[in-house]
Length: 300
Ligand code: ADP
Image (cartoon, rainbow, N blue to C red; front, side, top):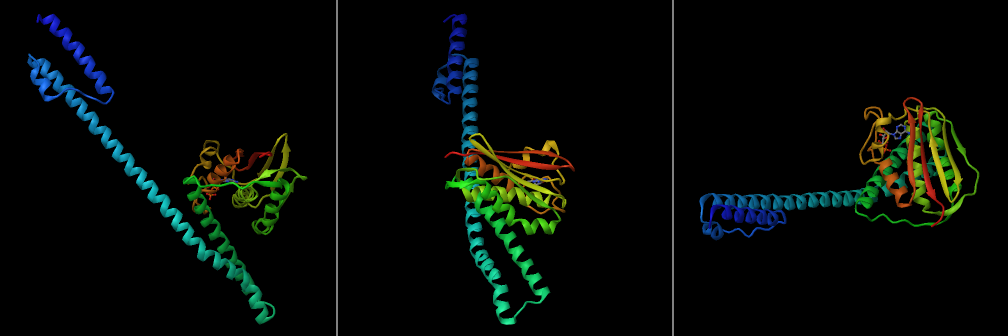
């Protein structure tokens, strides 16, 4: 064959092989290489075969790494699930015992000495704190494994949020913050009461924690076929560049030395709100305070 035709044929062959390799296949074999009449064609085909083998090796390696990564994530999720459930059982018992202790002691001793009831109060609050942390871990495990389930019922949003505000009266007083509830009910809708309560609880406990003892407002309002509730503090605030990442898992801004926390509350809140087809957002200014707003549909 004249050399011009040979070059043309080789060019076509190379293009076909490149297309094949790009699709993850290769029909070049040692025999096809040996059948080539000249050394440079053999070299080109051998090079293409090597390229294919390298790409295949890389692809297989990627598949193995991905599988390893999936196994590691599954092992972590399983550990989190087992550990958080195992922790919850004894903590629940401990909480019930601690709750019943003041009454049992009072029955035996008459009135309780001031320092004993103060210490019992402290133990009770620490058990509550531990339970809340463990509940966060249980939630993370449920959300990560796609097992979060909502249970909606007809309820008044004003009542749900007001109940949270009332529950936090003592905590707010202890931190020095005056707590004001804003909202007139009822705002009826289909809500998952315990999940809405959980989100409001997260936001209000953050407001107390980061609120520098200044006044806090928690409010509810209707908004067409939707409804809103918000928690506003006048505390440390959040720099603009961190206002998005605080809704991600384990992300924290406040220094860990002054403020303890896992960086999970807002991530869990966002997951819950989005599962309820709502949105959660923040407006904040450093040293002036933050307003977290949750917007929810009222219908099912
Ligand atoms: P945690 O408070 O346990 O660290 P969160 O997910 O609830 O976790 O909050 C993430 C971070 O967002 C906090 O570490 C804190 O830096 C910031 N943050 C949340 N709420 C407020 C608030 N009301 N004021 C100032 N910073 C806040």
